[in-house]
Amino acid sequence: MFKKAVIDGLWKQNPGVIQLLGLCPTLAVTTTVVNGLSLGLATVIVMIVANASISPIRRFIPDEIRVPIFILVIAASVTVIDLAIHAYAEPLYKALGIFIPLIVTNCIVLARVESFASKNPILPSFYDGLFMGIGLCFVLVLLGGMREFLGRGTLFSGLDLIFGQSYKDLSLEFFSNYEGFLLAVLPPGAFLGLALLIALTNWIDQKK
Amino acid sequence: MTNFFQNQKIIFQTILVMLLFGLVFALILGVFYEKTNPVILKSEADAKKRMLSSLIENVKHDNNVEKDFFEIEPSSLLGNKKTSKAYRVKYGDKLNAVILETRAPDGYSGDIFLLVAINKQSEIITTRVIKHQETPGLGDYIDIEKNPWIDAFKEKSLENPSEKLWAVKKDNGDFDYISGATITPRAVIKALKKTLLFFESNKHKLGFNDV
Image (tube, rainbow over all chains, first blue to last red; front, top):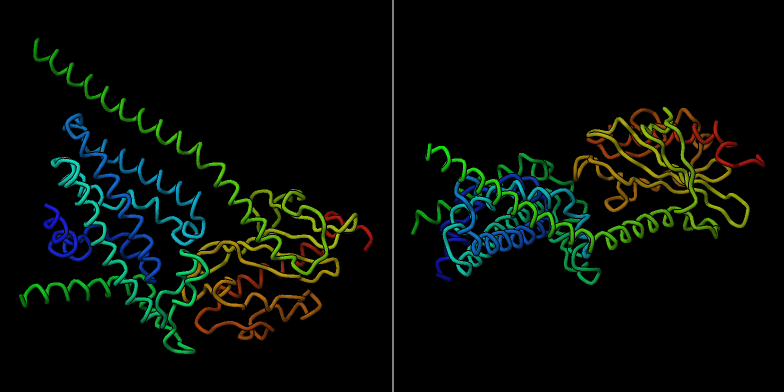
């Protein structure tokens, strides 16, 4: 059960490149590794909380109104996380800005609640949320890395905004006076980058 | 008839469950909001304080600048739609500078909001963009975190350079820009120029009585 959740979330059912759910934030936020990573982590937390809170109450939810109740629970947990980040991690809040509330509209959260947590006990649901989230986070970081490297010639820039000043040295700059490759930073670059990642996944799958 | 009553029972049950869920989660959110709100307000106030004091690092002052403000009615020169704030920077009784909020309505994507600190010689002390949506990696060099460009306005006034030269070099002006993104700096320069014009024509109202 644990192993299945890991394999499904990270590879076989990966939300970012296989299920293709939750593309709105995937495309919008991934201009840098750090942006991708931070939204990814926030999404992991939301998915765990949503899955783990729906699963134990799944028998009390009438079938006719399950979707509004799922949305209610997801929206409430996102709001709680949004408030918590705003209050206790102000720099992160500034970096993620409007994207945290947008997690509500990320259909991968609703999709996992509907297709998994509403039918399974709490522990498997917890794992499902965790690894589906990590799978998505992984794609966000990869796409962010591609776009940041091509678009700005850096990697991990802005890490200090999230983890504190001591991490500033970890950001890498590959070329001095890099002019930048604007296409990679703008939205079309997100579509092209994601397409490349999907193609790569399919290629690896076919070779097996 | 029994069917009707059965249906009705299901409807009421469903409503009751939905209502219950709504109430429970409203309660959870309410409690959490009450807990985090003071922290959020405090960190927002701190951020504002840091921003204001970074604008006037080299200006002598001993007043609590973020509390010492008055409201300015909407003006076409400041571009404010609602009343905007003007902060006084005072040392003792002497007014050394004011910080004005201004809006450039003609950025590449939407409004650009700035804070401008101006001294009594009508020179810009420092100015900072506080909110914008310019293209990341292109027009966002107006943001001090991305590029020192905005510091070019330090000590500038309507006499230095002359009013005609308040433009980007491409338009025969005096200010640098990054090629490929001229709309953004044009908007900022225009807004700053208009802010200085506003300052000039409202010096008395702003509290500079001795000049």
